[in-house]
Image (cartoon, helix red, strand yellow):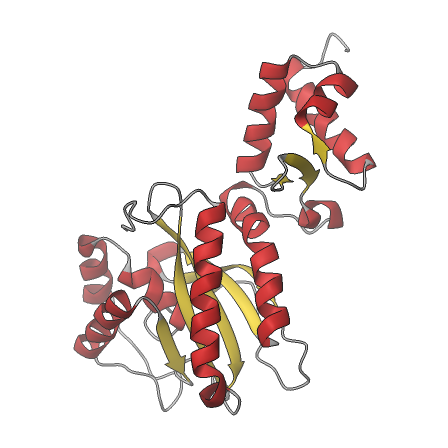
Length: 259
């Protein structure tokens, strides 16, 4: 190692460079041997890279570079980790339902930021930009994120809210919005039909981490003309998908499910 290098930083880069060269996941022991690292240090570094979303770990405890990072479109940090963990589940949902699948998290002021999306293969489909924020009060993801927010934060959001009618079907009465959010919490999912976009409808369900804290909302969005006939199937598949992502984040039933 060059004397000017920072040892821990150099080791992180060596791990990323090693994973970049390979096409298949590798065990921690292989990383230790290949890079001549102490096992304890290698374990700590891989845990950090995993939590930051730069690598993925499969069910056999093998590591690989996250696909988005390999492709050059990476977003690191917490959102990167969420996207990496959720992607296999989102891909399965898109295959099963043939609709657009979106993962959203709480952004500034309580509105929704898009973490990841996979667009439907159908010719007529729902799509959305990944930049900027989406209003929480009239979107399925937003209502899920509001429903599992702590009460004081929710009250503050609703007190500040000046809802506008984005479409003719947008609910703009704050008392009714509060009732809809409470219903989402009771039912475990949200459904929104053409309140945010004419021609688009969808459902969303909550994703929790290992502490029981809500970290994201998983959304399936469809062309409205297909939604009524597929509603039950979408809601059921969405519930399974959100539960699976939560489990991949370390969540277990009975732990928290708090804001």
